Image (cartoon, rainbow, N blue to C red; front, side):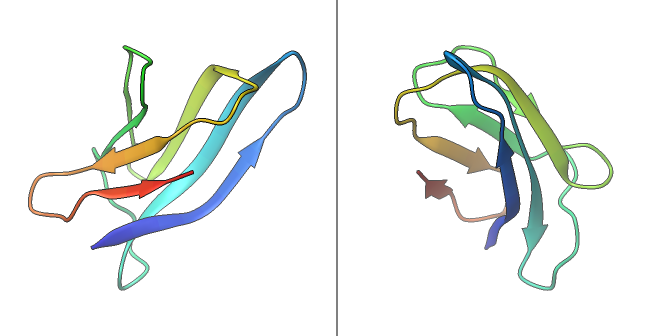
Length: 77
């Protein structure tokens, strides 16, 4: 199991960036986790610090999905 430790979003007509950290249940960063907003074709992957940035996010409500082999799927809004 894993989760997002923090998420930051910038405001405008579209949210310019959504940034966060993906950590395991021990607080360690997860490298290479797939992070995607449902309905958006281009996923991003976490870096060596477990950090990710999604750009040009719609200002509407979105569903963020995080997945990684051997971990449970985690979905948050």
